[in-house]
Image (cartoon, rainbow, N blue to C red; front, side, top):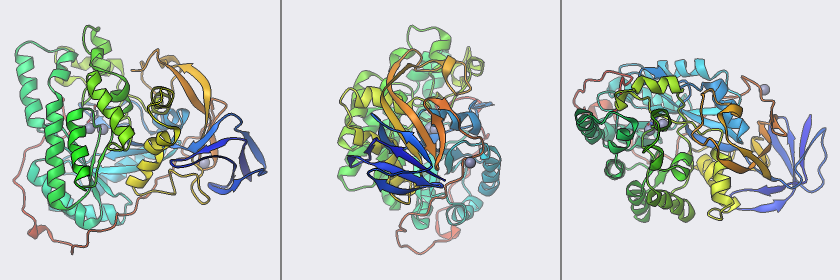
Length: 484
Ligand code: DUC
Ligand code: ZN
Ligand code: ZN
Ligand code: ZN
């Protein structure tokens, strides 16, 4: 059985040309003029692009006393509906839990995925067991990225000495550390002061996490990564303060990557002020939305290449879940959706406005991500032999974003009412049509885990636990009950 995508214009990160694409089984078999096959998908007037990769999602994640509402079923269905064909979720061990055991819990959830997926492993505590298991995670479990939370004090937050030790371990294993860069000590102090002064509404969440806390933590993580001799991936870069640190590091030859979110690119802090409680609380996420000057900085970074990737940090909570934080903003579950809307929103606000070229669009939604995460060209490419994760993009197709028509399992959408132009006509997941003329025909359980090989090792001999400084012990309560 073969499928041919016919009559379209192929757009990759570096080329734009007219050709048909023939798929046999799960892979691209041939690219060229006038191809034929058993099934023909009409791509006339469309762009044929590598399916999107969202490198940052949280599906059914235990967090702040609840679970994020989109699971691997609804979340990956939402992804495909918007042209995204692979997601990378975060495996979050509870403090004291084995990384391998946490992974098996994640495997139990991800079996329902409609599209392919991979994991990052979070370092939520530190000890000899974590040190040892990191090797198994990299060498046997196909995971080459470790996430560190510099915020959520007393819960997920790592200390600098732990981060330094873990970064060194990443270096010797050929893995890359990632950071949620916010100074958790300062956030905790500002939050307490705001609450004490009677500021308990959702807008106080934004005041508790100013750009400086992000800029400081980004700088700190970059310097620690440099001393550990390892590249660094900074998730959800939301402001100039953090972007500036990344830009400077790159100019100095450091391999540091920055990931703005579609939410921060297109929504600003006015979403929190003079709005009703539900409206503002639904948009509470960390980092919070910023002002327009910060937005301009993020767009400039994508244009200049100092920021490489657009993600969502999709972590969707219902209005009822958000309302558990009424009277105390630190208890509002942090997170927003976006998985379904990332590509149409970026096309509409990026490509259609002239901020990004079509090739840059492909780079930041797919190809750069595949390269940075070491799954290129299996993913992120229109090349013979690559997985047939493809989106046939109709630049004339329009819709108004609405919770009423979305795939995501929550009762609102932070982009409600926004008109987008540019949507999938077809989305293919490993050769299987998942969106057909705008209709969902994807298959639960079709998604497979994508293993990611270690990066080129830095060449040091493996150290043992004893050789690293054993960081001091920190008390942790586990999954945060509140948001600092
Ligand atoms: N930020 C959020 O808004 N949600 C999930 C975790 C995070 O860092
Ligand atoms: Zn984060
Ligand atoms: Zn996140
Ligand atoms: Zn299948």
